[in-house]
Length: 256
Image (cartoon, rainbow, N blue to C red; front, side, top):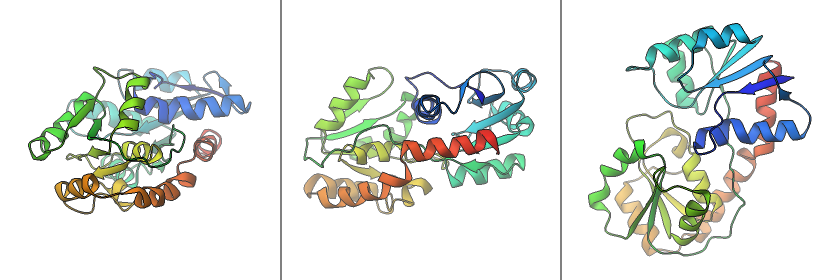
């Protein structure tokens, strides 16, 4: 099957998790190759009508809630004319249903890191796109531990790798948008670090983000969380396996 993914900037987490990783696996297995029979579109900055005209089958992948505000018209149109809509969480599935009437297919974000043994480090790490730092700002004054930040201004794979290996735990506060996946928590867990999470449906599916984030941070900084992390690693190992998730994409490509 000839397939094109539009979201392919390796500096963007959603591009790696929802395009580049499954694309690489499926191409290496000889199951898809470059072409425009199917276009898997994501995000914005492109014309949905042009994409719809250019391919036999259009898949719109939604991993953030832009159904209000200046981008709403783009997302409503793209979802409306797509043959299939995919998304990253059950909460996002409901959001898409509410705003477009389309029934999206949930495909998890895969992990992209080897599983590391839990190791005690130093300090707290926040990592992500700078546009999400407003979520951190709401609790930053309450963090009394050394805080390291990796965002798109200072990100390289090597910088984030070192920061994750060196920290004691990560902190992942949540904002108003509840459709996000747990990809940062999963990445932390794969690195053997406990993710101190804000309330988010995808976090709660893993048993995270259920308590006050400040209390969780105090516990993570003062207690050995190794056994908890190992239990979390057991949870994510199979569900978020890249090979499994590539098969989920293949089913969408062929059947929807």
